[in-house]
Length: 124
Image 1: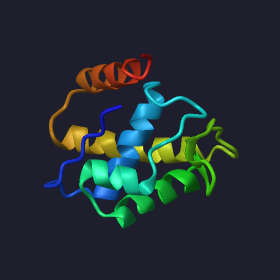
Image 2: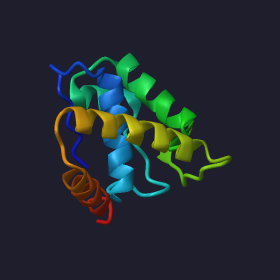
Image 3: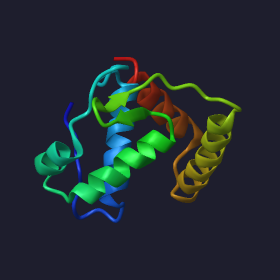
Image 4: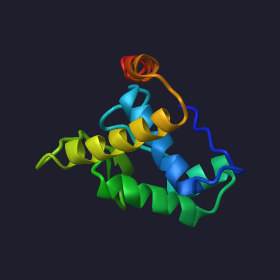
């Protein structure tokens, strides 16, 4: 899996890393049970501080995308949504994206086409 980080972005590096790993899981590039690189290895590969990678891994763990232990490191885990929290988060984020798209002049049909293409991209 190729992880793309934009060092010039306003988005914090740990958030970009978290997002890239989530996309990798969604696209099937990272399978359930697959080990992620160690914090040190990922930091070296990306040229970032180990604390940055650690923060991304902590966020992924808190959201249930990975589990960690000292012997096996970070491992992709099956994700389930207990209590519908993800659906609430999804609705909030979609509402914000819709508002931004509308403000920027994106038509409804184009927005839906973009959503469909993004979702189809997860069906590797």
